[in-house]
Amino acid sequence: MDSASRWDGLGMDIAYEEALIGYKENGVPIGGCLIDSRDGRVLGRGHNLRYQKNSATLHGEISTLENCGRLPASVYRHATMYTTLSPCDMCTGAIVMYGIPRCVIGEHDNFKSPGEVYLESRGHQVVVVDDKRCKDLMKKFILERPGDWAEDIGE
Image (cartoon, rainbow, N blue to C red; front, side, top):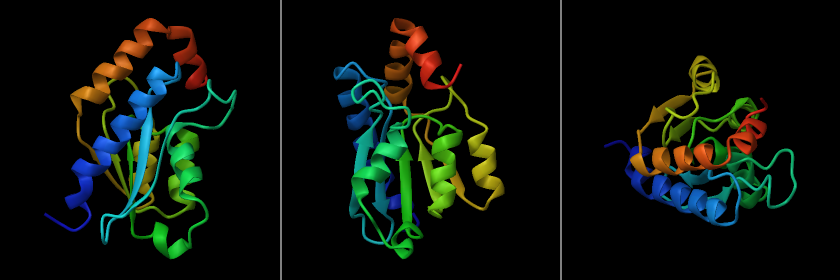
């Protein structure tokens, strides 16, 4: 196991916990976590807060980055972004902008962004772990609130 992947269980567990918090807050259940791949330090965690904060931009990955605070570029270069769902174009752009080399995705059956291909084309590693918890929670939300889901992904 390489040094980056040794934290995958922890990162995905935290991302899922965050998604569950978001769901319980009546928000979109997408969570994230940023971990320093060198030592497993959790740099930040967050969840989609669009409904809770009436925000146009606080997706799970953006919330995670916000909760990290200001970090030197060198820290991002050794981090992994964990997200429960395939990152949208906005979140993909943030991963690219900060040079986060690795993105671990819980699932992309409910939503698969072209961002995955874009990340790979820019030299980022993309790992999809096919996490049943993430799939089930997102599917439940989409069935319960299809209009809110469409709004979240810009449809």
